[in-house]
Each structure stands twice: as structure tokens, then as C-alpha cells.
Length: 124
Image (cartoon, rainbow, N blue to C red):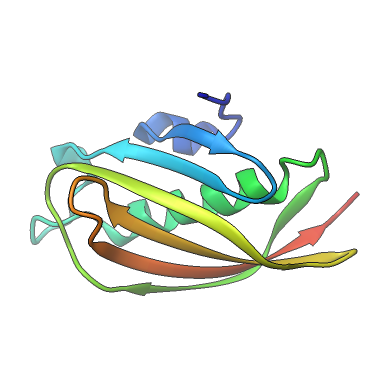
């Protein structure tokens, strides 16, 4: 499945949606030199954007309107090439808030690059 991305920035940098359900959302990105920072590894904002988009896809897959209320990311390892995957899974979904964990990995090796935890808030 390849869901439509309504997030213009994520689309602009090349992120693709692989799966989007309330239980799991996965997006991927093929790294290019445009995704790298000054020391030649993937820019932290790219990893954050992937994680935040995966959270948004999972949080809104049930047709609710949720936005990120708060988030935290730990950058664990840098890479400079390959395909990245971000996978969001719910920890707890309540009436107005929902907590998600998102792992960003290097697709081929499965090495964890970043761990993201975010809270989504239901606006409608």
C-alpha cells in the first residue's frame, strides 16, 4: 500500500508511506546527498520529520484529526546512504490524547538510528 501524503514538506524531501493503520504506520526514504548534514550523515531534521510523519499517519488513520502535542527524539546512529524506515506504534490511545513510539531504522540492516516518542492531541 502506498498512501497519499498530504504533508507537503515530507513529500518534498521524498518520504513515501508504506502502511498507515491505527496500529502501525510505516514510511520510508531513500537517502540522497541532499539529506546529509555538514559532517556527511543524515540530518537530524530528516529523521525527526520521518518520525513525526509516521506518528501522524498512525494517529489519523482512524479519520480523527490529531496533531503532535509534544515529542522527544534520541539520535542513536548516523548513516549517509541507504533507505530509512520509520515505524510508529501506539503505546496508549485515549479520548483526547494518544502516545506513540516511533523507531527509525536503516532498512537493509535494521540498525536503530533514532527513537522518537510523541503525544498526539485530538483537535476534532
